[in-house]
Amino acid sequence: MYKYVFIDLDDTLWDFHANAKSSLHEIYEQKNLGQFFDSFEQYFNLYAKRNIELWEEYGKGTISKAELSLERFQHPLIQVGVDNAPLAKQIGDEYLALLPSRTMLVPYAMELLEYLAPKYPLTIVSNGFVEVQYKKLNSCNIGHYFAHVVLSEAAQALKPDKRIFEYALQLNNATASETIMIGDSYEADIVGAQNARIDQIYFNPNLKSNDTFKATFKVKGLAEIFDIL
Image (cartoon, rainbow, N blue to C red; front, side, top):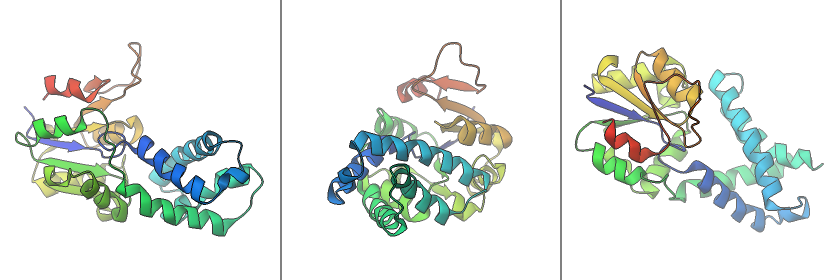
């Protein structure tokens, strides 16, 4: 039925949460941020919550890449009374240098790629930054599984805008009806694919049986996709 598979990168294949946490923990120690915060957990929770909000704003086009990059590191500092933009920028620069070298994948990500790659042309569809996403793919040695890597900056549209999906379809010379999208973000990946009339597999490890999200398929683990494709 399907001939092409589109896949999100962060927290679908590459474990963004785990990799971000380990990168920031290293920077937290190096920069002696413990002088400002009760614990690393306090710092990381402030960062993580604001980071999600900022990516949603970036996806809607209400903030720029530069604003996202600075604000997510400025926010935790301001919450504890430290107004230091140069320090926030320093943390951000070091984070973007360190993060892509991390190699933690979501459970069964490698097995899924091994299984899908011989059967379908695979395409990454991601809102992530160009300078970071390619490094991630190379660091964890999964870049070779993909026929195409479609990033929002190149497509000039951010998920859930249907134009990024249409750009990926054009690259593959594919139609929406023969394509399926796998992703962990309901708003970006699933609604975005729906906007482009592409079927979807919603990967949500926290899926509840009474969940009201609408998707072509829903899975709690990547291993369940073997039964779908």
